[in-house]
Amino acid sequence: MKTIVISWRYLWSRPLAAALNLLLLSLGLASITFVLLVSHQINQAFDRDLAGIDVVVGAKGSPMQLILSGVFHLDVPTGNVPLAAIKALESHPQVAKIIPISLGDSFRGFRIVGTTAEYIRHYDAKLAQGKGWSGSMQAVIGAQVAKQTGLKVGDSFAGTHGLGGGGDVHARTPYTVVGVLAPSGSVLDRLVLTATESVWKVHETDTALDEEDQKILEAEREVTLALIQYKTPMAAVTFPRFINTTTEMQAAAPALEITRLLSMVGVGTDVLRALAGVLLLTAGLSVFIALWGAVRERRADLALLRMLGAPPRKVAGLLLCEALWLALLAAVLGVLAGQGLTALLAWALQLENSILIGALSWPVELVIVPVLALGVALASALLPAWEAYRVSVFELLQSR
Image (cartoon, rainbow, N blue to C red):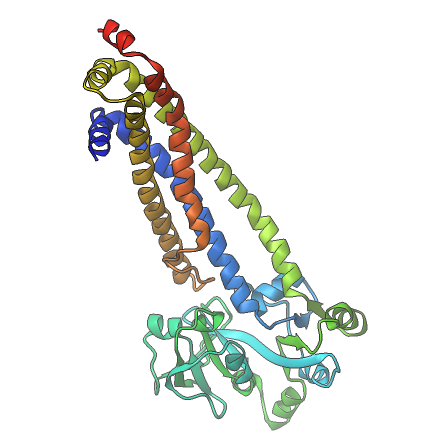
């Protein structure tokens, strides 16, 4: 206990040097914490939102754009496809489940998604208030939508043309909120869900000139894309080829496209890891210099301790404890700073109605942070501690 107390006082006997070492070490650990948290939460969000979706079928274009727009609702869709073409896939022997998705409108930046009740069941979402829709122009809103817009069961609202806002308001065809979903952590939290018929009705009402024109529009109805689940894993080999070669649509495999996306994002995380490594190396050198200097400056104190009966290991332990104090403080500050940066990013993405990153999480990977702090501190203290250990009492007294 005396060693711990004395080492603490020794550490802060030079406050500026101690603060600088603590800052450098904390910055490196905060960078690593931030990268670990963001990588973990993005992977978790992707896994959660992709669960049970084997392939996305939509208009030809960029496969990654199709995945980002149809599954994560982060991009604009590649176009629309005929309703008849999607319905034809329902009878395909390799298709177990198909969920149509119709996009085009939004409300205060939140996308209005025309779909079926199966979309809610797919993510095992529960209603916090109200009920599901039973007809057109009824909406069930996600938890984040309710929180940021203030909508509640019984309220009415009109959608805006376009996914980014700023378009024409469909004032002639308002929606009525009939249900609010409980927070699920999935993409549903930031969506306005309604029956596919609602999306058709909104646009047909605004564009149809007469009854004949209305019938033409009904015959040419489209959806944006379809989320499909296979009956067997073997379908992953043949079904996308069937879609891409025999139809005017394209099939995009989420697992493949997200792997490509994460490999591109990985370049940025590698840069952050490299920066964190440089900061940790700098911090380690700084701690080493500080402790090496401390051994030189404290020869008189070390001599006194040895004369009072302190064994060499006790003297070396003082230096190691001093380094461990730095490691402990830096690990706490680094993790807190990393969590703070992640919370700031989560807040910014929430304002953009973008992919959800939680404010606080404690993945198992975070154990690497205190381990790194301990490793850097001990590596920096070993040589100074050995120097203090091996010098004899006579030499220490001679240095007086």
